Picture 1 (cartoon, rainbow, N blue to C red):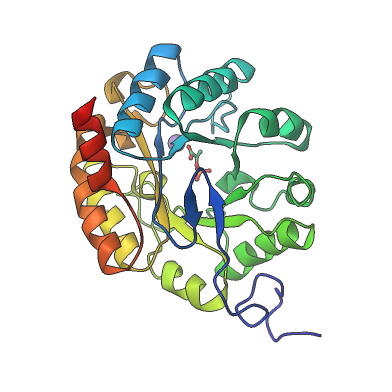
Picture 2: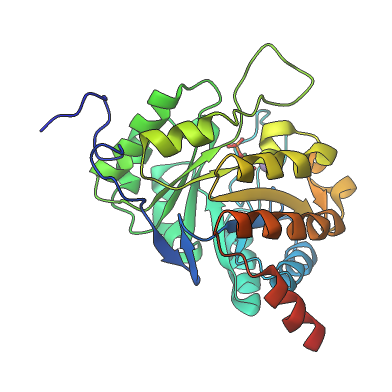
Length: 286
Ligand code: PEP
Ligand code: MN
């Protein structure tokens, strides 16, 4: 039984209804999925301060790299196991789910014990042994688009995971390389509605890696939701100017706070649940 597209199981032709699944009370693919946190876990104070803020805003997903794929071998490479332990401890204290990057097959066993969702970074989108192994990992996978990859290659990467037995894949548009250097990457907003047309998988947007510029993360976040994204992954830091990675694109906590009512209003228009108002009530009680 073939379809005309080179990918099959991930295609809308194969399965008409949206794929949805629940993680930490959020129905991914239906509700608005908000993931926020630092680029990298750096220390206890950082991750606990940020986690407390997220919990107060009713954000249910904490991101943070413990194994970081850095362009330079001399850049901070992440706290590794210690970083994962800190993420888990903070997430458990504040009722959050953990999203963290998996770089190689030999770390899957460790990642699945600490993280709730495994992130495949742009540099690994075509790491086929890794994609195959993630088909059997038993946890949802957040699959970033390769910075030099077409939409078809990206969907074929997702097909590796789904055909391996794991249908819980979330696509993430994070920008591609173009001639433009004024932004870190060129975020492909058009990919969002196009993916919705081509595939039943949820798709979110990463306006942080997508722009590289703190002050344009909020408008681009709004654009992604308006284009039909099922959520966002946003870098935020309690002290962006001191961040060990991606400080320039990390929001101040207050900036994330200011963005949420806008996203909440948009979510309502799109019939996507995002209980930001509920969080205000809860946090005002404590
Ligand atoms: C990140 O999320 O910090 C990251 C490294 O993302 P990407 O793989 O999209 O560059
Ligand atoms: Mn980053």
